[in-house]
Image (cartoon, rainbow, N blue to C red):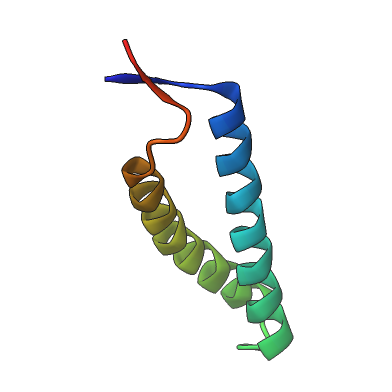
Length: 68
């Protein structure tokens, strides 16, 4: 296991918010459907997939990781 620094957590939070914002903006800009409910479903499904890969990528980055 490792301990995560505040700096690492901040960088992860910022990078995730940029990705999530971009995901939402693209879905809404493309007007994938006329029904807001389905746009919300699409945003959440694509958001989950992007979050999974975001976390997998950050697990490979050693910046801000300290062994316990």
